[in-house]
Amino acid sequence: MPSDEKPSNRYLRLIEDIFFAKYRKGATSLAFERSDLEASAKKLGIALPKNLGDVIYAIRYRIGLPEGIVRTQPKGKEWVIKGAGRNKYLIELVAVNRILPNSKLLAIKIPDATPEIISAYALSDEQALLAKVRYNRILDIFLGVATYSLQNHLRTSVKGIGQVEIDEIYVGVDRNGRQYIIPVQAKGGKDQLSIVQTEQDLLCCREKFPDLICRSVSAQFIADDLIAIFELTTDDDEIKVVEEKHYRESMRKPWRTSSWTSPRRMKPWRSPRKFACHSRRPPGGDIPAMTGFSHLPAPVVRERISGGTNAVSF
Image (cartoon, rainbow, N blue to C red):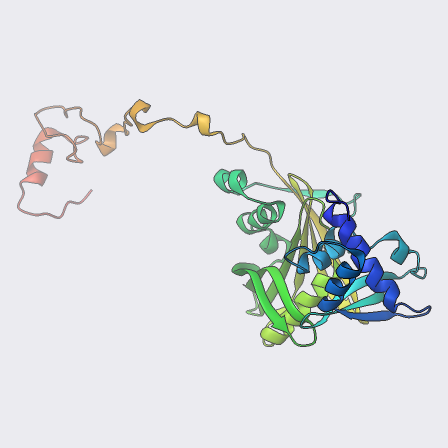
C-alpha cells in the first residue's frame, strides 16, 4: 500500500472487499464483524487505523459507500451499515438513507444568543452547532416544548445494536405536563445526517427512558448562520421526516479580543445624582460621600444618619 494513500481510500477498499466476499445477487442484508476489517486489511496490505470504529463512521456519515457497491443497489433502495450487536454490523438495503435540507424552505430569523467566547473557541463544527442549538433555545422554538440539556455525547449499549452514542440528549415538558426525551443528532462540515443514527437514537431512548415520550431531532449546518432542524420518527419500519424548519441567526458585530479595554484605562462610572454613588458633596453641608442620601437636604440626611435607628426608609 502506498504510504500516502488517504484514509478514505483505505476505508472504501476495506468495505468493498468485505461486501463482495459475502454478497450474492438478490441479497438484501449482509452480516460482518469487526474482525473482518482486520482480516481484509491483512489481505489487502492496508494499515488499519487505531480506532476501527472510524472506518464505519466515515462511511456512514462522511464519504459514503464505494461506487462498486452503489451499482448493486436496486432502484429506490440504498445500502446502509447498521449495528447488530457488540462488534457486529449489518449492511442492509433500505428505502431512504440521507436526510438533506430543502433548499427552497424559508428561513426563520432568530436573535443569536450564543456567547461570543463559545463561538470563538468551539473545537469542531459539531460542537459549535450543538452550542447554537442550546444557547438559542432552538428546540424550544421548534418543538413548542420547554427543554433542558441532560447530557452531551451519551455513550451506552442498546440490545441488538451494540454501542451507540447520542450527540446530545434533552428532557422537556409541555404546557400540559407531558414529559419528553429528545435525542439530538448534529452534523456540520462535510458530515451528513443519516437514518442509521436516528434509528439508534430512537431505540436507545425507548429502552433507557420507557416512561418518556421520545421525539428525535436532527440538526445540520447549511451555512455558518443557517441551521436546518428536522423532527424524525418511524413509520412502517422507515424513518420519516415529521417537520423541517430552517433558522437564520441575526448578525451581530464579531467579538475581537483587541477591542477589550483594560480596567486601568476605563473611566470611573458615575451614577445618577439621586443614587449618590459619587463624590460630590450635597447642598447645605459637609455630608460624607457614599452615604446614599446626598439627594436630600443636609439637615434631613443628618437626622436620618444619627436618628438612633439603622433602618432607613426611602
